[in-house]
Length: 608
Image (cartoon, rainbow, N blue to C red; front, side):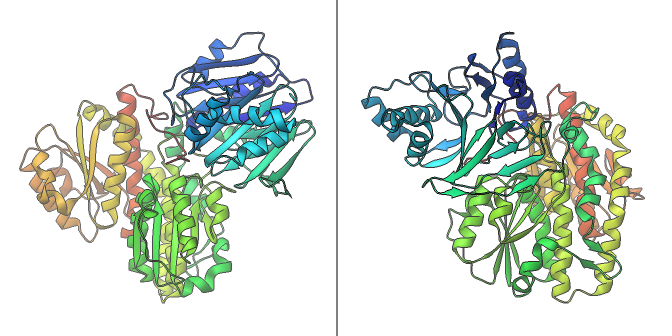
């Protein structure tokens, strides 16, 4: 949520153009409102996305440095007055902020008593006034910022600018991601690397408690206690073009179409098919500990949680380790029973999901071995876990997760082989899984080749207001994913259910206006799924079947059929999620909605 971008340079470039262009690449983080500030031209803010801000910015607006922001509202409605940047009472200090200041009411009351007047209902404005108050006594921008940050409780990623020292911008991080971009005579601050990549590939990821100062000539980093620290410079290998749409109408469709490449990238260098082994370099340091693990807990949110549910089936069946899958948002409010023989696996595309991060921290406090399956290199979860596996899916811009989910499932399969071979999985079984994994890219490409047929189905059913998705065993969680994708980008009522649960309540909803999307591959529970479809048809419910190629009988029963290639039962979810993603995409497009930006949602949820 919320996108931050800041720039300072000595080359004579127009900061306002750099900032506005950078905000476009951050829109997946939030688009309730947008704003920009330069010391030379002041501030412009507006509700809505960057396009609205660009219309409002005067032609003569410019500057050598500045800060900019895209907001996803947490405190205060998405209005112009609540949009960032926010200033202090004097208009000299300006701030952009991602996160939540938990004690903002307490601080606001104290500042109000000292004569401060607030214009907005946001927590962010309080921090600007707090720095202003300390500047009265400290007489130093950096010292005032540090003093103010030491008074704050909560999460934040900020960029702070002072008209008195216009070339200098201060950034700070506590629970909300901040990355520095290191250029030649210019430096950047952002929520993630995407707006930085057109200018430099050299970045520095801040850690919690870091306060960074950038000028055109360099940067320094210190802790909240003023002690100096150094952070490693990382070379980002994603090109700026990778975060563009590549000719597709929407990022979501582009990212679905990247599925075959994503599988190859997640497998590359990790699968030794001849011996049925998975080489996971990120786990080598904890391999011995993993061999002694007696229990696994997977924590995640959204589609990552669904990946975890499928991983549960894999690991229990092939590695023989008991697995529990928890919503990360609930995990830390329980009193989970963990010990040194427990591994906690956190799954997160961004590596910044606050609930998942806090679950990791809770696991560490209770002595568990913590592992991460994340896509964003250098992210907080990647750094704070004991070990882990990177997805290598590349940047995912659309809010609805598609290719990241596929990469998570492939990574979980590799982890299953890794753990299974430690615990007696036969070489033959591992080789069979490895061979099937290598065949997946071509099979996904085959599914993508039928996208026109899926588009026609979406058009046929686009007038429906209700859907239920059903599946069993490995494809039970896939039903949740189908429903989640449809509801989050099309805003219709959609539910995912275990097919065996239909008789325990959901079948009461079925009639000729309530379609069922049945995931019914030729697997160990095929006959039971067919039986459920008969029950639905007996109540005049329309049925779309997602079935295995060659299954001609299902076409006699279902109203419509989407066919996918045969694969191992444990890998069938990787194929089956693809047509469900396409169906949701075309469904939303048919309704005239933008699937890249579903209302009320943001890509990276870094607050509760």
